[in-house]
Length: 116
Length: 116
Image (cartoon, helix red, strand yellow):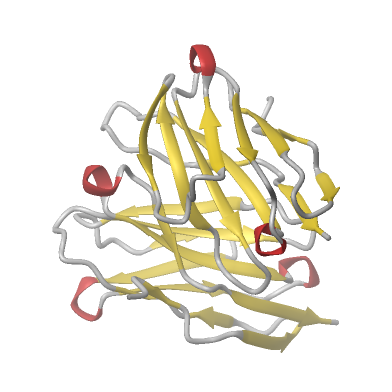
């Protein structure tokens, strides 16, 4: 049983650099979510995809952030010109509606970003 | 405004004690979904339960039980006969369905420490 995977698991970068994270959802899950979690807080929604279409973005997703999901499979989250405030755990989740049109999001292990 | 409130920041119990984690939510929607996730020290969010707004039946799964009361907007989680392996941060989350793209609104979490 392959769950949601994320790569890398840890990333240390210097302020101003660009970083890219990858998320591979559970096979056949057509919905994919990105969340950000800072220390001592619950995850906060960033954006989500249904297949390859990005349907919603949070106000937290500044112009420096961009997400893609080509071909509706894996997704990437890029942060340009990183700032120290971007230091956080970036979580990916995937889901599929069941026969009753309800869904449960299953999370990956996260990518922990530290911006120096 | 916080839609999910977990008033207990930290709870410490001795093994075999019962413990209840509180969750209060706020929504104007008539259809919504409530979740509990467990986040062990490894960091990965583990799905525990999903509850729909139209199903107020309480649920028991082994040592875990959930009490959903719409009248008080609460969705509390009880662990019976706690074990050291239950030590983790537990998050309650609310999804307001299609209006919000099924994004999860998380509480700030309750850190549970179970000591031998």
